[in-house]
Image 1 (cartoon, rainbow, N blue to C red):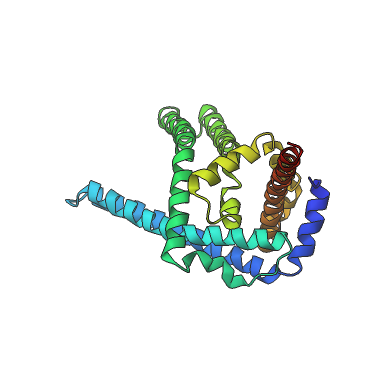
Image 2: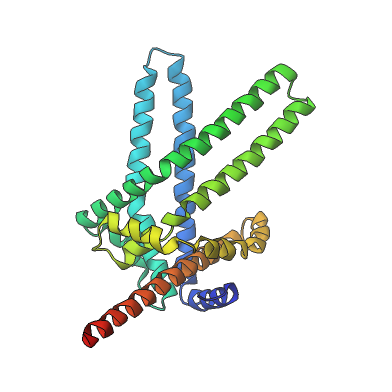
Amino acid sequence: MKKQKELKKHVLERLMCCWGESCAVFFIISGELLVVAFAVMLAYDYLVRFSSSDFPVWLAVSITALLAAGLWIAVAPFTYGIRWYRIQQVRGNAVFARSMFSCYASLKKMLQVLKLNSMLTLRRLPAFILIFGAVAAEFYIVNETGIIMGRDSFLYTASAVLMLLLAAIGFCLFVILGLKYAPVPYLYALEPNSSPKEIIAKSKRIMKNNSRYIVDTMCSMAGWLLPCILIFPMVFILPYSQMVYTAAINEIIEQDDKKEISADNERRLAANRI
């Protein structure tokens, strides 16, 4: 597999052909995140209002959950389309920007994506619940400490810092535990006729002993995060980082393809000898 320097050089060469599209994706995703943030704030505001009125809280929660599910369904095909576009660019295939919306082209494709994404979410859910539960418990302890000891106390400040540290560790742990599913969207893009179970099983197989490669590649990008403090450089740095990540996933997939071809050739030679 290529070393990190080789990956970055290759990605920069490919980005010269699609900087505009990659930056456009950044703005689209940023817009989606703003919509999600606005929806969360709006839902929270309504829950606070309805909890002090005659409006049933369970109904407010149900409406919020339905809106979240609707947003998840609407966005999922686009996220898979982006992966398809990126891996094609990494492989040197010039494709149109509109291909990012290809998963909306037919109901069959949308259902395939939603089924695969649902199975993936269910597999990641236990780790998310455990980590989120631990962070929520720490948040509760910090809040109670602030009430009892006062928010100006040293114990409250230390607890708050510890909470942020645990939250960061929890996020990193969740990402690392989910690395075995990282190739799933890219495998779907390359093998759309495979079943979700086959794609997930292949993802887990090819990521075995290869998670370190992804971690090392992304750690090599850590220095690029510093300019993101200025906000504007994020427009270029995040698309670059995402393409490097895609290139690393592609290396693992191509290595596995080479092994399968080699194994098939060996089986054919063995069959001919017999």
